[in-house]
Length: 104
Image (cartoon, rainbow, N blue to C red; front, side):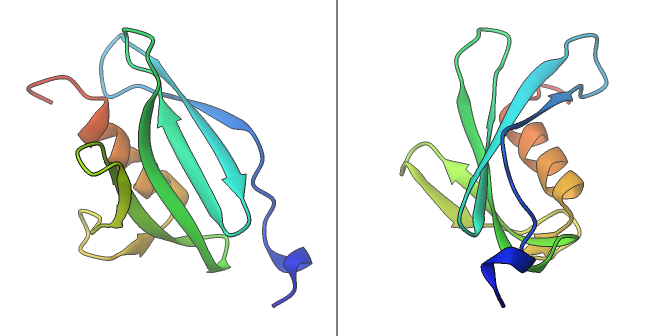
């Protein structure tokens, strides 16, 4: 696979709204085969969310959640039971775990 065949991952932002009036920005930045996402909760402090790893197709990426206790990204299962998925599914999972308030 040549470097030119990979999708370009540049600075992107998406607003995550977990069914509330409170929208939260998410910044995604990439380097080589990885794309990392950080969220910005209501208090304004950036929170690392997840890492996506390019696996040969733009529709399916390896998924790793960020664990603050160990300061590492670790391969994780999505709710569907897979270690890889589409960017939207992985971002929704990470945002629900890291940014959603209690009771969601």
